[in-house]
Image (cartoon, rainbow, N blue to C red; front, side, top):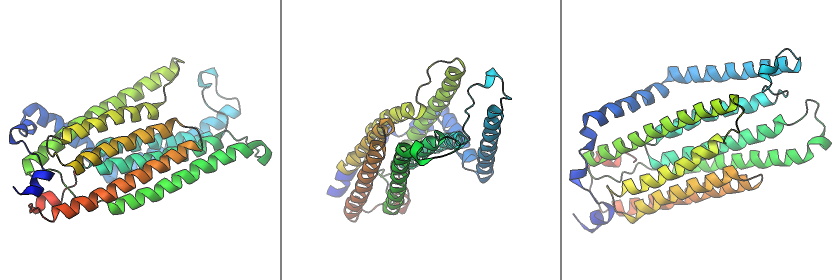
Length: 314
């Protein structure tokens, strides 16, 4: 092993048999089955249909509420038709969070840009939320301040969208693992972590619904889940040290964890600071991905690895 390999890799053969354990294999199969079904075209059509039905149903319920045809049991139904857009976007965000969790096993960089995608959608939802507070008959004098907040969220989302497109162009297929066994072990651990996050996600949804109907103060779902993501990102940083002691890998993964922290701060901030923090997180991740890939590629020119490792992004 030459000096470049020593710098880039720190591999422990004895640690990479865990993915062959029957219980772990069975758990991984559960994750693979969920991922395969979720990402199939037929299931995507089902989700799209569900969004349309939910949106139209919310419009109908709001109209019935305005006409006074719903009883006190449905007092939670809003009176503004614009609220239906916010509700539909909220459901869409739940789907995107599932996509984020399932992407964890593919690549930490891919998971990071999906987090930014979700942030841009949250900002758009926030803009629609402002619209939902408009009266049915809109006058500029009544909505002047809200319009500024709406444009702040909307243009913040647009700039993050541009940033995500640039980050995707910067991304390259780079692996931190030197052997197929090491790669399989790392992927297995991330699949187990993703499955755990999926269970936590579903549990939070159930609790959110229960608290809502019990008239208990409902926690902010996305804020809470991003807090959990911070800890999972830090865990991935430490796990990656089992397969590489490269400074580049350590800095990149730690930087991604910090990026999640900035996104979490953006979710908790008021306009226009939420958009500013979101844009800052995007620029930070963009610079991190660009310079990491450039430095990694320069050093890898001196390392000869089988093609199967350079074609996988982990």
